[in-house]
Image (cartoon, rainbow, N blue to C red):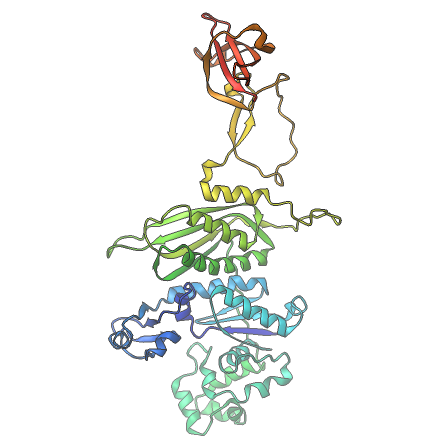
Length: 491
């Protein structure tokens, strides 16, 4: 087996910084009541803000500093989001909280062209999510974690080189990933006898360490050096994708919201890639700022319809932007949430080897989705024939179906006589036309008696030329007073 460890030492900070495009100073505060700084971004560090100082001291050093309380729940959710995204590289993933992800990548090497290209792809794609981490590869998960923590970039693909790679690591690393089994007393004991790195402790007899109550240290070393098994629980990706992104500050700027959305879409892309699937729609939830203490966060879900089964994140981002720019937001947005479910297997499109248009035909589904995102869902409809002889009831509004999704169907049973494309909302009274203006007809239409009084019609229709040289569709009522009406225009 070959393990890739992805360590995110600044995860507490990055869950807040990944959603911003500016470089304003930001610091993370620890739990109440102390509220001391536990992490700070480079802009805050440049102002003198360092971990350990109080909230008041931090604000005195940088009055423009943005402060956020640490959110362990957000960190756990972010680690799970990264694990879901990592499914595009391997299906064998294990969470190693609070800040580490373990990927078993042996079976993925050939697919990605080798170890180095795979690790490069992982690092670059992680940046698209808005995270930055340290990566290392080793034959055991614990060794990979230690190397990622202390010697990032190490790529050890065989057990033969493992001992030499681990030898210079500081002895304190054995407490990493032990779940508290290695205590401060154990480390003080080793430091007291001159043990400073793993090479030093490996030279000691195991029985002597056990007698000195350092059995937990030897257990950790055995796991790291592949002397004993180190089984890991596998991460099971969710069937429904949900990702949450708190923004550094409330905003109603579309560009800032789209920047944050791009982070969420990168995770969605990994979830879909792992399933070789696509979506027809997803939901973007805007969580608005609370205006007073104790009030509930208002949120607005916006359904983004893609117009076709797709996992093209550029398409998703473009359509989401259309929704966001349709009108002003009711309040500044404090966080974004992306929800998606019902993925379906996405097969590659079939193309003609000698396709003459070089793929430039266009996408009717994308056009439809763009118009609806810009104008509103109800503003874009299509007409379809309805089996009714009455002209005003012979059509219906219907859901548009792009040509690439429309299946074969029987043509509607249309009348043999011509019908105008432009039908008036209600027939318009007119004077009796001269006989020479009647070009075709009569066509008798009698229908609707089954719908009750007032719904039945009995008319004789003609194609005629009006006094202003328009080609019109007119009729005469067969019931008294036998009035004449214009019902539509041919031209």
